[in-house]
Structures are given as structure tokens and as C-alpha cells.
Length: 523
Image (cartoon, rainbow, N blue to C red; front, top):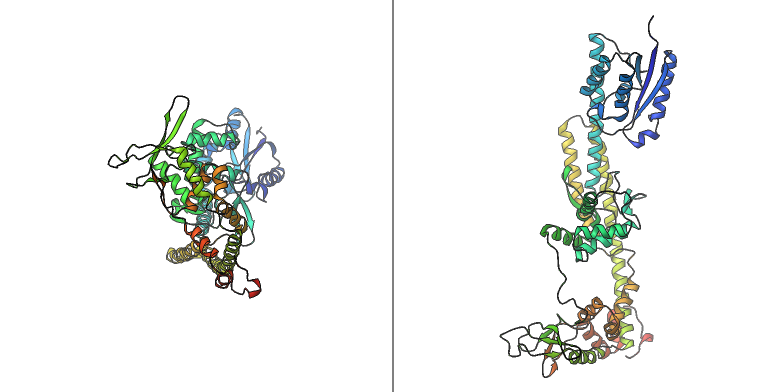
């Protein structure tokens, strides 16, 4: 009496997308169950794999479980049913290995769309069909790679893998486009800028910062965290560029929004290359805000600054450090220097009417420039879109080409068009963004210009250094006996002085075309 045949169903997909589509795991199982009913087989168990990648079939968890199940029930008459020959194995070699492995265990294999025969002819056909399936997969893979490469060359991140700080958005113009994913994008920006500036001395400091912000969701080892930090620090994607050396895609500007600028990215790479810790500048001391800006009146060497201990407290002094200088070692009282500097800075206060006129001129020039820039941007973006469409058409032609020679022609054409896009994108990237808030930026700048003394007395060290750069054209000369020499104001304050002594109508007629005499007033 023959043993009853018992069915084991095996289903496999290689992506999450296939799980949800018509060739998903549930639909494969249903077709196999219908087949089992038609063959009068009882289904004992279903094994489902969603393992990605080829190679040894024993790497697939469900297939390994299936074989272990068979081994623990050696006396049963099993048949393994799968939906299609392509679901059995990903390549011809592993197809044959798996068939032999099941044959040794006395297990038959069946599927609804192919009849297995234990004859030389049947084995030959089975091998040919397995090889055909492998060929189709390799061809599909090549087509996908070619399209992805063309997309990369056009300036788009093409992979589905998640990039921290970004998410994929379906854009009406660019199709799939990376956009900032908040709050992660801002956290990454702070981390990258902090490492570039030396705020975070080491990659471990960056890791600890990210941890404090709840950036890491999974509990991992210290080395895994540091690997993730290193990837963040070395991805030029965050600077708004695309590159993929594995496919020989050289660096080019991408269409996605940058989280940091390229200069910051290069500073990060420089710090990583040097491999040492950048120390804070010695002149970055809030106690001596003028250090690094005062020079000796005799030898023009920048003055150093330090405290000297008195009977009851410490006293600050500026000194010349040039041993060849006549006044080397002579102390200049910090309190006297800062007192005279305060008087000097208070004199930098342009008339309100001059400031208002300057704002009008700046705003008018800005609007005129933006209108011209906007028109040029539209022309270039339109050209970019036309070239992208042309690239897509060539990418679609590559898989249908009859010979490798023709494929090479298409690929070279894509490469040439991609370089044209890169040149256009680089020029567009130099344009000021449309969402740039010029009004706010202008008011912020004039906040420094209108009353630099107020900023100096209430601002942080960085604010004070900015005041120095905005107010003066060069370093201030200091003499131990006579104090400050002649201070040369910056170009901005020289212009304010010129505007203040010029008829405002003449200025307006020069910078604000279309202004009538009705608007005439005197500063």
C-alpha cells in the first residue's frame, strides 16, 4: 500500500513591493493550494520567504526550515509545490543543487505551469528553463542599473534605501525627489556644522550629540554608532551633490535641497583626513574681544593680551610680542583701550535718513537683480527638463538595443547630456533661492550698521567680531602713549558719509530709476 502524498507549499518574493502585488506571497499560496486540491494532495504546511539576494538556497530562512521539516519527518511522502519555476531558485546552479538535495530526501517537486519529468529530455528542458529564468533576471537587473545610473547622472538620488535626514517626495516636475525630513534634517545639519567648526572635536562627540537628540532609535554597539556617524560626515549628498563611484558616476550637483554647503562639507573632509583635533583659537576669548584686531603702531604686529595679577584682582593688558619692536613688552591697559574704543565706535552712527535711503537703494537693486535672475533660472530649468526627458528616452532605448555597440552609443549620449545638465545645474545653483528672505536679512545687517555700539556692548563674541569687520576697513593701530591712531572706516560707512553730504535726489536718480522730483528731500 503506497503512502499518501503530503504537500508542502513554498512561496518566495524578493522585495516588499512584490508582497503587495499580484505575485505576492498570499497569491502564490492560493494558486498552489488550488493545484494541491486538483491533485488531491493534503497541504501540511506553508513556507514563505521574502529573502533578498541570490546564492545558496540554504541562506533562505523558509527554505532551510522546509528542509529541516522534511528531515524530521523522514517517513512521509512529501511533494513541494511552488507557483512558478522561477520561484524555485534564482540561478541555474542553485536550481540543480536544490533539486538534488530534495531528490536525496525522496521529495518530489511540482508546480502548476511546468511538468517535471525524470528523463534526460525532461531534465534538459528543466535546465534550459532555469537558465532562461536566470537570464531574464540578469537582463532585468542590467536594465534597472542602466536606468538608475542615468537617473544618477541626471542629478537624482535613485535608490530606495533611506537616507537619514531626507525622505522621498513625489514632485510634479522632478518625479521622485529627496526633500528634508524634519526634525532629523536640522539635527544632522547642526551635527555636521558643529564638526566642521570644531564645536565637536571628535566623531564620538558627534555621536553623543546625536544620542542626546534621540537620533538613534535602535540600541546598537558603540562601533555601529560610530560607523553611522562616519557615513553622515562623508556623504556629499548632504551638500546637495550626487556621486556614485561604484557605477563611475562622478560628483555632480543634485536637484535635492542641500542640508549644508559644499564648503562646510570640504572642511569636514579636511578634518577627517588630518585626523587630529582642532583646538579653539587663542584669540577667541570673550574677555579680550579686541584681540586679533589691534596692531602695534610701531611694527604693525598684532597685539597679544593677557591678565596680570594685582594685590586684589587681575588686570588685563595688551602687549606687542615682537622682540625687535621698540615698544616690545610695554603694557597697554585693557580698560583704557576699551574706553577709547567705545568712544570711537559710538561715532559710527549714520543718520536715519541716510540709512533709510540706503535700504531703498538696496531693495530696488535686489528686486531688479531677482527679476533678471528669475527669468534666467526659468530658461535654464526649462532646458534642464528638456535634457532630462531626452536622457529618459535614451535610457528606455538601451534595453531594446540589438547590439552592445548601439547600447554604448546610447550610454555615451546619456553621459554627454548629463554633463550639459551638470553645467546648467551648477550655474542655477549660484542663483539666490526664491525663498530667500531679503527683507529680514537686510534688517539684520542694518541692525549692526545703525548702532554697532549697542551690538558691541550686548552681543556675544561672534557678534562683536562681526561689528569689527563691518565697521573698520583694517586693523586698529594702538600706541602705548597716544592710544588709537587714525581709524579707517569700512566702505559701507564711507558711503554713508558720502550719501549724507550729497543731495538725496541726485542719489535717488542714480540708483532708483523712475523716482520723480516729488520725492525730493535733503538729508
